[in-house]
Amino acid sequence: MFCSRGDMDFSTGEGSVEGRFAAYVEHLASALGHADRVAPFRAYCTGLMLPGERKSVEPMAARVEPGRVGAAHQSLHHFVAKAAWDDAAVLGAVRDLVLPVLQAHGPIRAWIIDDTGMPKKGRHSVGVARQYCGQLGKQDNCQVAVSLSVASDHASLPVAFQLYLPEAWANDPALRAKAGVPEAVTFQTKPAIALDQVRAAVAAGLSAGVVLMDAGYGNDTALRGGISA
Image (cartoon, rainbow, N blue to C red; front, side):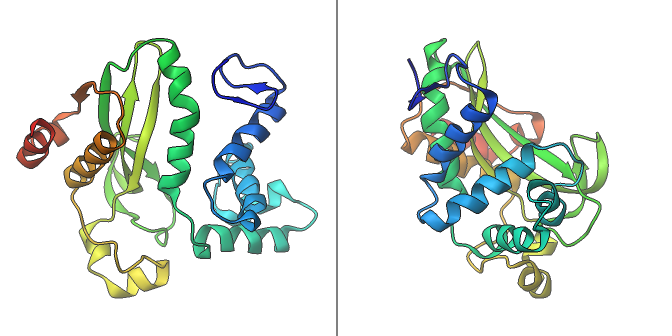
């Protein structure tokens, strides 16, 4: 009875996997703002879910539309690199859909601050640098994103997710221009990003919980002070 979309019930898992995925993507697409972004968004989500180690645009285009790889690549590249849409709005649509289901199984107990390292072989993706990668347990070439999740005794849900831009990237005009980093994006430490995420979650009225983090965040005085303020 929670988060139904037409005859698809996301809380019970009724309906085919394909039908539930299509309904889920349709709901998220409502946050994109323009109807012409829905098809490439659907293709992009499908490409991320399909098997295959490489999740960059070109190999995903080949998997999603093998009969028209060139056109699919152009469409996906424009959607990811050029089209103006707000990833925070899409994540908000995820939260609006999933959070009621999570809370149906019990109250929110904790807010979890963490970061995720994504290993990368190339050097041109935004924010790629040699830094600590949690997936690998060591320093390596990767991107890092800071996240805030809410958790109950039953499950957890990320409610904020922001790519960390290392200072070397933030202060390099050539790198920024080549990767299309917006001028408004400036360097922030990971704890500063986390504090912004916590404040946004409070402003959005999310149910409160104990804030959990590892020492990399807990040692930051400004973050601890901002959370307890």
